[in-house]
Image 1 (cartoon, rainbow, N blue to C red):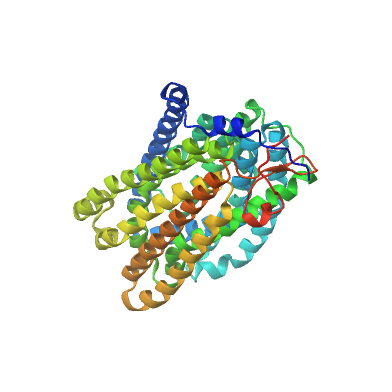
Image 2: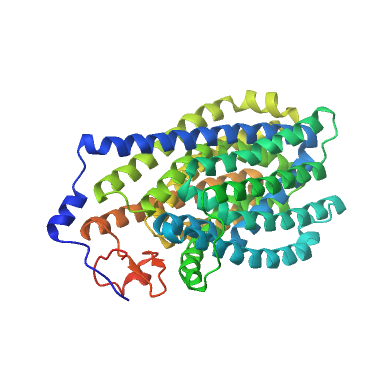
Length: 471
């Protein structure tokens, strides 16, 4: 492996010197523009999701709403596991090594097609067990969504390549799916023809056409037309598996309550709980917008140490403040909001909202912190925090659900989320200190194959004896 010096002491001092107000102005204004754009898109998407949630809840009722929530929870878990972290790896490498962007996207696509086929076969087999005797419609619903995983996997490389190269187009692709979904289910609900199967078919159609849009925009952005490269598999697999190590515990920490309740309680009870979690998850649009902009920017290493540190601190603070401003009024107004919007059948969700407010606040913080750490090339730091949170969630669910039911699940979710946020903040302090001691640039080397190797974790970079830049 060949490395080159990062520069003279004078060059390093000049590179890492805090920028003047004049010099930082264009960068700051450009960043604010991207943040505002991403936040606007996310808020519109959130509004579409809320409207879709209200339509589904009123049309299906608590029982079918619970079945729908269970199917979507397992569908989300299948997506996280099946992607093998390649969504994050694609964004990371397209941002850091743009000259090979097309090949990274093509390599991601082939990897995920293979995992998608495996997931489809397994999902088809386990669907009857997941349905818990709820009938053929529910079994077919599970099988349909496992098939949709393939569509999601095929489009993933294009979608997350856009995140690194054309973030406005990426936001457009993400906005498309919830808007189209609402456009499909709303007319059916108006004429009282919306069923569980109809809702899942509408979701399938929205995701399938989203994949077409993602490909067309990726082609315009110059991301299509690449080839699968064996030399890129190793770096993408290392980063992807490190990301997966954090993503799976993250799903366990965030979604395990619904996964457990899908088996432990009746669908009607789960449907009520799902309403409460969907309301407290309304903090995610702002958090994901902040993280989506900061992740590729930090991965590109375009900022000095001083500016990067200031950026990530302000971004995390903004995410937490925005979450608090949303959740506190929501908790206070829940006794009036839930019956008025969703109907009296969902009134038992009111006390659950108060119990889930800490979870919503902490999950907004972990969403931003996770993207910051991944932008610094430290997905394993996220993995360790999420693994600890997942372990606590499992223990709390086992202790609280048998005694307190869904209220215990809400308390477990809040406790696990708080632990995850605390550990990620601690990891960020360590990363910041480490970067400052090394002069701002984390080790980076170029593999003999030509692929850029990130500082995915200290264990992967000990072989680099000094800071280096990509040649």
